[in-house]
Structures are given as C-alpha cells and as structure tokens.
Image 1 (cartoon, rainbow, N blue to C red):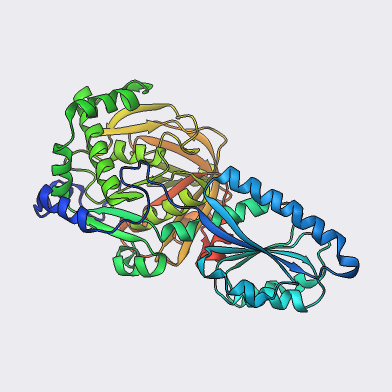
Image 2 (image 1 turned 135 degrees about the vertical axis):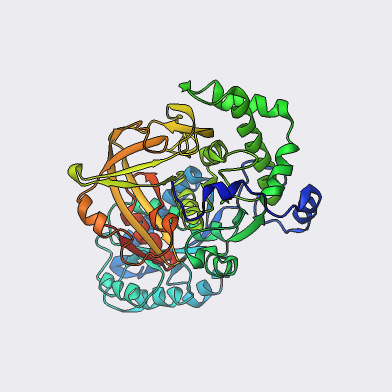
Length: 478
C-alpha cells in the first residue's frame, strides 16, 4: 500500500494518443526476441564457450582425457534439461594455442573453463587469465586433484574479473552457474512495457541508463492507449478467459462480480496483445489502480507464464523479477512488508500475486478472488502460500546493488488490515533487519524504500555469484 504517488491520481488519463498512433509506433519499432505472434515470447539460447585447460602429457595424460569425455556428456545433459543453452568450442589448451580460443569468443555469451591440471601460476593459469581479459562472464570449474593452480584463481575476483570460481567435487554447481549465465544475454534482448511512467530509484527510471547498463529497452505507453487496447478486445474472448483461468479455478469469490472479473480478464488480453506486438517480456504500470481495470489479475497471469508483471511502476522490482525469472524460472511477489520483532517475523503482503510461485510448470496455489484491499474495488487475489517454504527477499536498486535476505514461511493470515495475500516469514533477527532496512544504501519515497520482491528458494549464494558475473554488489539486509 505504497503512497509515493496518490493512488487516486492514477484514475486520471494520460495524454490521449489513441489506438491509431499506438499501432503506428508498434509497426515502426524493431523486434528484439520472439517470433511474431509467439506467446509467451521465446528467446534464442545463450551461447556458452567451453574450454579445457591443463597439461595433458606424461603422468597427466590419462585422467584429463577421460575427464573431458565425462564433461562433454554432462554438458550435453545440461543442454537437454535447460533447453535454452548451447555449448560451443571445446578446445583443449594445450595443444590448442589460447590465442585461437580468444579469437572465437566474440559470439559467446559466457565462458566455462575446466581446469584439468597444473601447478603454481604456470601455463594453465596464464592461459585462463588471457581468456578472462576478454571480459566475458566466466566460470572456472576445478575439482579436487586438479593441481595447485587454484591458489592463483581468487586474485582474479579481487581484480574485478567477472569470474565465478568452483573449486568443488559437486558437478551440479556447473548447472547452477550456467543458469546464471543466461541472465545478462536475456536482459540485452528484453523490452519492458512501462505504462504511465516508471517509479523507483533514479537510475532505474532512466531509460538511457537502463539500456546502457543492462541492455534492457523501456517502451513507454500511456494509460489512454491501454484504454483503447482494452476496448478492442472481444468481450466474448474476455469472458472465456475469465471463466477458464480464474472463475472456474478459484477456491471462492468474495466481493467481485462476474462482470468485474471479465473486465480484468479483458485487460489481460489487451496487454497480452500489446506484448506480442512489442515482443516484450515484462510490463509495469504506475497506473495499475485505475482505468481500464486494476492490473492485479493481469500481472498474476503474466508471472504464472514465466513473464513479468510488476505493479505500481516499480522499475527496481521489475528488473529484479526479470533477473530471477531468467536465472531460476521463478516469479516474484512484490511486497509491502512489515515486521513483528516478537516472533522474528518479516510479514509480506500485497494484492498482486502469481498462483504458480514455483514456476510455470508447477501446480497453482489455492486462491480466493477478492477486491483490491485499500480501494475495496476491482479484482485481486488472496493466494495461500505453503508453510515451510524457504524464500529469498530481494531488490535490485540503482542498477548496481542487490538488497537481499532470506526467510521461511511459517504462517498465512487474512487480516483485513493488510493487503489480500499475506504470509509471515521467520528471519534470524527481525530487529536487526528492521534497523538495517535498505542496507544503508537505499533512498527514495515510500514505494522505493518499502517494496521488495519475494521468490521461492534460498538464492543467497547464487545471487552473489550472479553479482560477480554481472558486476553488481550484494548487500544483505540483516
């Protein structure tokens, strides 16, 4: 229930551009990702260049050659499981000259280096250093008994190289870092529909800075344009959508009428059509409380589909949700949190919530259809979260810092004083988190200071690795 902008102001229409102008704008803009008419829009696979580095002669001959075959099979399995990553390269250095590898990296999104063997800071470490100097996001996998060159690897991170170090016997850590390597290239192909202007930290609200830092394009749309698009949707199609996805699946319906639910479904179809034409992966609106319908159901279904729908024009949270969606396939829940130090609880609540919080392939959580709480109008959701679920609370601010904390859901409530979806998470020290909110680095109005996005799972270490790959810092709010 943020108040950086008075919600009643959202009811006022923006400049009346009209549907004809919007259509011409859509036709003129270049496509970024996804084929025409594709829903949800698809992105090409991330391209990861793999390289095997280490001495292969003498007593080191048998193990490295055997390991290469094992790694090749393992990477093929990752390709099949993820479906959106392609491994290329596969050179062995030596005998391949590292300069020949460097020359091929121009078309790669990331590099995966396998340290086969080698001692000290000799040829293997020097070869890896030359690849790191290219500047691509890189991971180095160095399992036990790969020699002693690992002693020199931490220095690369201290020098600011975008390299994640994996000195481990757990091969599944390769899977995790490969998932993270999808984030940056996908962001560079991302377009966000921004209705009625963005809100949040100043850098996140600057289309130029967002484009320069992340490659993301912000597409401005007025409220009046969304009204025109809403009018263009066939009411019968909206009724079918409302019945199939919402009315027939709800645990119960409390306040909203059937007509109000159909109107919200009509808005979803309008935004779906807009996103298809724009080949956009996300939408956020600072006018989501007003005409032509509240955005709660629209954003919920977009998040169910693996896209991003973010309320109140919150660009920081929108970018956070995109990162988590690209890395883990998970939707985020934008929250207006409060504390209860008596139970070490961080309580999350809001009126927009996905029903597939474990990802698009998961079962829908039980939900009740309600009005939006503080206006007592429109249509929103009370989604019941699973007790015992680990969660990560995060927000990417100022385009350079990720605020993070973790917790575990221990209670679900339906208090009329709060927004519709409510759940309590146990945190290590609620009072410390209360006093450290924002980590000493976040400034702004109520929404900017308050909002966070909550995701299923504990992703603390993984996001630290993403920060290394993408060049942002991680600040723990605890």
